[in-house]
Length: 421
Image (cartoon, rainbow, N blue to C red):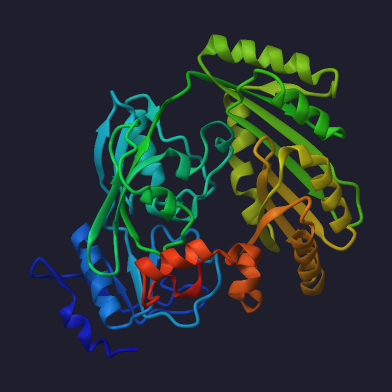
């Protein structure tokens, strides 16, 4: 690494950019400490920092809320930790147009609190309370509301990024129908900070629903029949979720959740329609509202991350749900598997608990099931296992992404080899 004496060059608009030595208790990425933590206070300072790092060949990792720094492969070395927490403003809220523009370091929880004052929300409900706007977009992370509203990639309509040559680039705009320009926002979604630094983004919003009800279908056996019945109907749930627990050596236990959120009259009608469709398949169901509904959903979001073991993110075709359940049942001969999933979309998290050998065997079996699972990515595992190839699997081989990496980060300073590109 170039000597950090070069830090005296770290300036923007004639002013020094804040930095400090790393705090060993928090400034770490999979146990690897940076040489310096840089805290830009403006988009210009972000761009200047990246230009400085690129000129000196300094490997750089971008941090938002730090909730997903352990995702991806561990860095072999790390020079600069670029902390975006000071870029935390809501730049513009056009409530009449249902759009908001936010700096990348703003916490989603703070943005939602502001928007709810105007009866609106950004339809994202990830499990991490401290997640930032930039981090959510960079990892394309979402929650149960993905069923109806999609991921950050689907909700973003404009973006500004800082590139390693010190420039600021914009794409999209501040109105929902804007389709002009290079769709940089889609490229940055899921890039894990390995192409450029997101400085701000504009999203389309939704009204806060006036009422909601969740239909709980416990101890479900014929899960594929339920999926077919709901997806073939005109029902529009805001969430359609699967909880599957296959304790090693035991039969899998399945529960499904259908949530309806809208005007009270619409929720009542949708719930009644859903109950009529569920009853012939599995009569043991019930509906919850109010505090009971909140208490049902709140702990569920963080539950996969609270337990031990590796966590794998994977997808499947919704029509392959029975095959996915059968695969989990087969894996549970050697490991315990807990699945928390968007059943109507065909995507979820698999928490795998077992010995090191059995865990490796289970993940290998998931990747070998080409006719069932796709995009199998390890998001949590012991550091000693997390080579880049093992974490990302087949998704690592992407010539288009590799070409983008060469174009936007020609010297390869961003991401420290942690991301998919």
